[in-house]
Image (cartoon, rainbow, N blue to C red):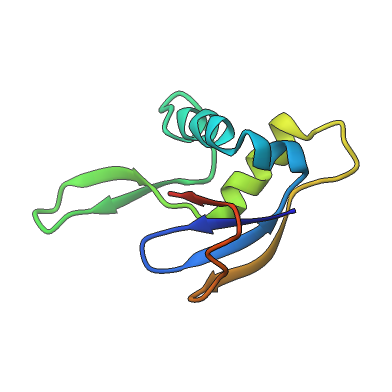
Length: 101
């Protein structure tokens, strides 16, 4: 089933099993707990320098991180994996299930 993953100005469309849609907020919360956990080593942590020369650490991710997390942790033993259908779309159906990040 299609799921709209909304960001600030656009969205990605992903395909996920129906049970993900049915509990989408739960899975979003679990994903956010994982990605914001500073003890977890993943490729979405980025370091950058602010205008004062201070080194800062933050997160940079899109739906690819959510899809990978779903496939590695929730859908790992199923044949119906999550996948990205479209990225950075500016128009989507308001009737489709959606998550706001």
